[in-house]
Amino acid sequence: MSGDFSVRRAEAGDASALAELNGFVQDLHRSHEPAVYTRPEAAEVAAWFLTQLDDDNVRMWVATAGGASVGYVSVLVKAREGHLFCHARAWWEVDQIGVHPAWRRRGVARALLRVVAADAEQAGVDRLLLSSQSFNTGAQEAWRHLGFEPQSTRFAIDPRRLRE
Image (cartoon, one colour):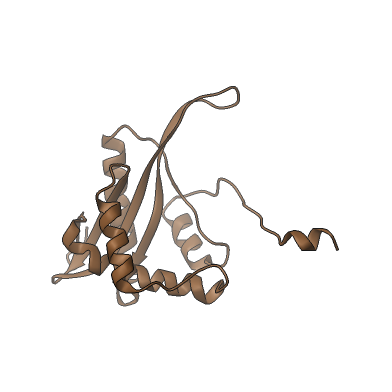
């Protein structure tokens, strides 16, 4: 990690701090797509994090510095059976990652993802996936810098536009 912060598995006592960190990410998304993203109350988000921390298919880590939470990552454990067109596979999906604005560009996201990668490898998982909204070019640059490669592109349209 870094001498300034450390990373550990998140616990129930972290729910309020996770909710606060999530607020920075949610605000960014809401500012770009207010018709899609909401701004729930912190208590609602903390309660949601508690349910996630109790879910066997979710893994969460938090970065702390001086007793304060400065970043977090949550991962969904995924698997798909093989079928005619694809082999069976298992992967971890980075569902959320957020770093307090004062701690960005200090290696927090990198440290969080390295811990995720180590645990994934130990669990026999050989693929980490994550998604990013197209407006979030800063995050996309960071993911590329860390070695993530684009895998697919998702498009959206209001169906009324196709009738024009």
